[in-house]
Amino acid sequence: MKFFLDTASLDEIIFWNKLKLVDGVTTNPSLLSKDNNDPITNLKKITKIINGPVSAQVTFDNHLKMIKQGLNLSKISKNIVIKLPSNIEGLKAARELKKRGKKINITVGFNPAQILAFARINVDYFSLIYGKTEDWGFSNLESINETKKILLRMGSKTKLLVASLRNPEQLKNAIISGADIVTIPPSTLNMTYSNKYSGLAIKKMMLDWSKVKKSHKKNYDKN
Image (cartoon, rainbow, N blue to C red; front, side, top):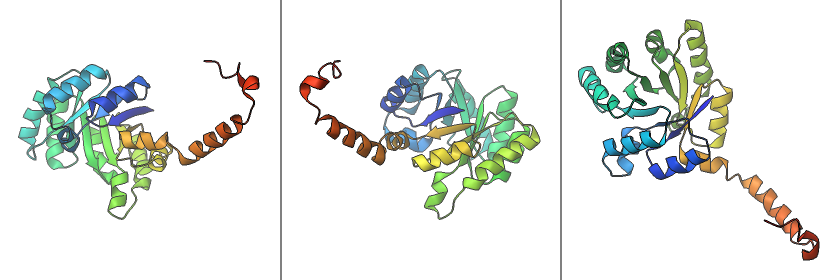
């Protein structure tokens, strides 16, 4: 089970990486646009912080341009993974880039059937979108397990990466439903470790502890 961080923020990557919770990083044009910095420079800095895979997404809708851009992006670092869309043009680009030995992450997958052609050529990752679908009024939870079953049935080496995890519940569901990798926004990690009830429990224990005589807890509270 691998944990990727879904962000282009250097501060967030450094923070969570120090806690040993980052096996890789996924970026996209939206995330790279938030820092208002040169995206290539930003990606270079990320690859120096993270030893694992760092996904960089193409910004063209034509496979020939995707291939050319993908090859350029792969020059940033040996751990760059080229992120391509889950459509026909993305498939054409993936086939060529795979022949050239490049690592591929197919993104914006919403239906398990989309994985079929990509699984046949053993792309490295297939990113299935989960949380975002709830913004559109439906859940994509069952698709995680169904996509995993397809991969197993096909004997593919492709790893199922579940993306767009908006809260701890979605994070938990993605893992128990069969994701090989989850890519998590920093906001979701912050939410996970700021649990309301954990906070209430700690507050109650500290209140009880405050009632103990200082002389009795002097040695206990040494630091």
